[in-house]
Amino acid sequence: MQNLKDFTYQELEEFLTKMGEPRFRAKQIFSWLGRGVTSFDEMTNLSKALREKLEQISFISRAEIAQKYCSKLDQTRKYLLKLEDGNMVECVAMYYKHGITVCISCQVGCRMGCKFCASTIGGKVRDLTAGEMLDEVLTVQHDVGERISNIVMMGIGEPLDNFDNVIKFLKNVGHPDGLNIGYRHISLSTCGLVDRITKLAELNLPITLSVSLHAPTDEVRSRIMPVNQKYPVDTLIEACKKYIEKTNRRISFEYAIIDHVNDSEEMAHILAKKIKPLLCHVNLIPVNHVEENDFQKPSKERLKQFMAVLESQGINVTVRRELGSDIAASCGQLRRAQEQKSKG
Ligand code: SAH
Image 1 (cartoon, helix red, strand yellow):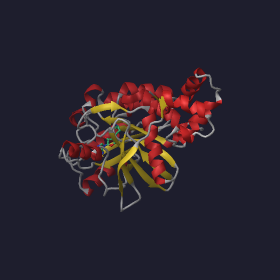
Image 2: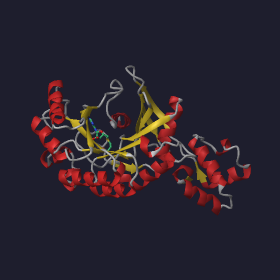
Image 3: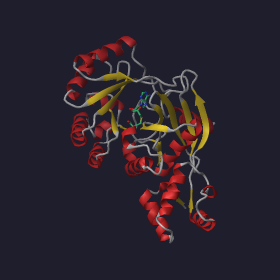
Image 4: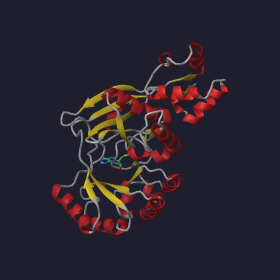
């Protein structure tokens, strides 16, 4: 059965024209989907006959809230969502002055194997479809009762490992007849799949690209990120340079800072030297402790020292503000806890 939310606007038009319907039906249905309807009966401007016909050949997917955690420290809400087939993914709603941002997942699990990350422990189960990613946004928006203004693709999964569905999702979520969340309000984070960064550059979308660098040398990066064996640091930085040239957009380098792994002054100097020529920003994320490994956050002094080196080299650097730190740290941990529970 066809999930109507997996169609682009254009594909929906084609689908409906093939059924003998006029083109404007696509506009009507697309906007119903964007408003989060869950049944054909709610599409009140369609005839009963058409609704019945659609029901026989298609469906409207939805994501169900399996668990929800509300932070007592700030307004952050973290969700474990159940997809149609019972698989679980996580997303988070974060309140900022400029609006509500939702962090979404793009795969069930992940196959990238980063050593500090909870999402990858059980490997990848499957990719999410474009419609399922939209469901995450719709479900969170419905729950918070306010418009979502920004999206970050920093939940479970590697967006560039699910390239086509992610691009389709970005297109759909930005459509004026749908949620109308444009590229400029979207960030996408990658562990550094160089060939896909190049492919993304060709599309020239005004999204913000975040690159999970986490270490400036192959020796350290390969130790914590297996992807580095395929795409080494310098190759990655070169691809970022080309990306910036092509899109004129600043890249944000994510740096999960880990005590005595990648937090030395020497590392900071090497990092500064390598990225100094680029239009970029560094976002330091004190590593969240995951039960299955023993990576720890550095002390405040070491973090400060690392930052000071970058700043002295003229690099723009921030430390990620921790939101919802009382409701289970980084993505992947809720799903992981749920899996462990169901295994008994
Ligand atoms: N696969 C994508 C996006 C998912 S994770 C990527 O790798 O970029 C979003 C960010 O959180 C990435 O920078 C990731 O490396 C980081 N991250 C994962 N586990 C973490 C942890 N335990 N502590 C801090 N950051 C973590």
